[in-house]
Image (cartoon, rainbow, N blue to C red; front, side, top):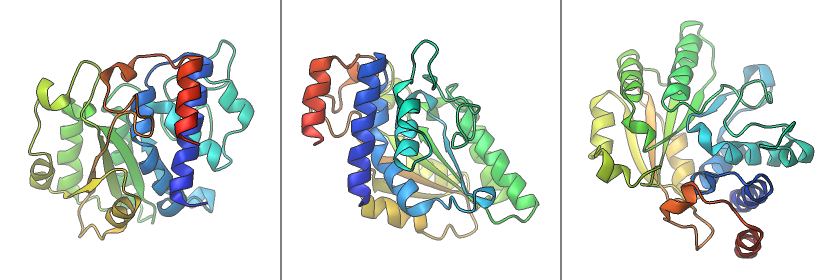
Length: 260
């Protein structure tokens, strides 16, 4: 299965989960599906488990995307997926570390997962353990002060075993981050904090793969992935309402038809 097939499977599972549970954040989940497909197919070292690379979805409201990726890798069962966000179900709407071994941290409060990952990377460095940490953050999340405290911490210590990927879809809960709390020039800001900062098309698997594999030159690395909220489903793409709207049966039918 190619990474493009994996991304399509992840998106289909997201749509089915959102419809079954009548839960929001489907647009946020769809935008990072390509990033997850490349990470789990080509980048993360998952065996042996005790020496695995760590992956953290810091934008924890996009939990369905991680659940879908873990399901595709055989780490969550179909029963787990079908019990998402239901009474007496299996998986919560925001990530809980106790839900499954593939969920490394509890996340949902923005800015927290990123810094927990940095702590892990620092620990591996201090113990001279050859393990890497990867974290997806949101662009809206990047307005949190804790993100920039962590960025200073990692840059100052040269944590070259840590890679952040920003899901830069330019839509957050109440509008566009670039209008609500402007943070451009993004790449230059991260560079000034001592990071190797790269920009890619977040739906181009070749660009993602190359950036994630690029030597970090003794620095922590951030890949600013330009994405589209709701990617893969035409009527959801770049539409703020799909931060909140529920996927009806008709929406599901149309979406799965496009993703077939």
